[in-house]
Length: 237
Ligand SMILES: [Zn+2]
Image (cartoon, rainbow, N blue to C red):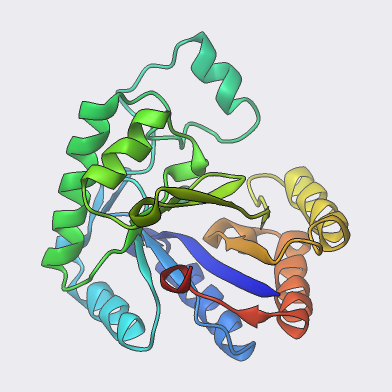
């Protein structure tokens, strides 16, 4: 039984909490994948944060897999239509950058993002859309960009083998106190319901640490799942 742990929203804007999550994983003997945002909310271009990119390169040398996670992460300048609202209902506060994009627009952002990460000396192996929200066109663009892996909320997509693996994802929400408490309760339920799957994903977000309820749940479940399973990597799938 395997465990795939990732840290989302890796950006200098959230550096303190990204590092705190990394340290939590390290204490559990886990090297998480890092889902990097090249220009968080259009205001945190990686190019301007050499100390942070040096930290990322050091983590990659330690074995962390790097995945592109949007270009700016938010939906600024991207109006939703009704089906988009339905799809994203309850999932995100306007942080679904790829929710509305067609293939051309998705490809342009992915290409720029990959270039940015490579300029920073990183080697991205995949792409995960912010909030896991994207049309099928985005996954086509990921494949055409030569990236090996992407994922949605229910599956991991292996583009090199044109296959999808069912894999439950456990995540928390620190957006409000209520959501933090609910997500901690859901994580407890998932400990039971997701255990039958050979590959469980734990997706950590810097915002999980905003509230004690979600932060404590993240720590408890990291330890609990780690005791139960071997850490795994996207590149081994
Ligand atoms: Zn994200």
